[in-house]
Length: 218
Image (spheres, rainbow, N blue to C red):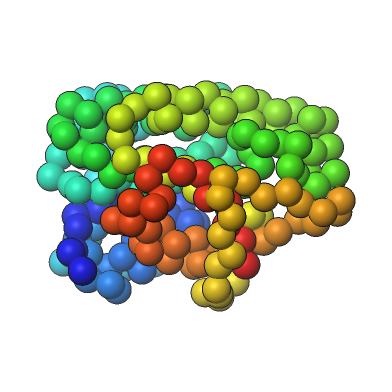
């Protein structure tokens, strides 16, 4: 299997760090784009890892970070309480896909909650109430829909991965549904961050997932 050079935006986050660690274990060369240099315990000390500290709102910093990579995995997302940054996923995605097209990088993998963008009617009743009533989720939902549109309007070989509720559990087999999954009335599917990381790496060069929106959970 070809060993790509991968850049993970949001590489020091709880899911992004799992992607970075697993990619290194599997022999890839990895860059982690981070807003602040993380504590040593977050990411491994590896000669195959480059940590790039930068601001995803700054196009020139994003383009410079992208240079020399084959695959982009974008896991940048706002924290629930960080209202001033609810738009970060949109701004970051705009800068990333613009830079990718200028540099000729084709493969893009993005991530969102399974029902945080399109097909919210497929979510369980509890999740629909949360997205419609809880103001922060409504805002994030709105921005995530815009992020989707930005990516889908490009000629990139994109995949937008829809994840169940994320946990810190162990690696487990993944159930995949494309392009959507209809939940039961009170169903709330979960998936571990380790399983999400493995899925991202499993589909790196699989054309069956190009321009697709797989829903995954365990």
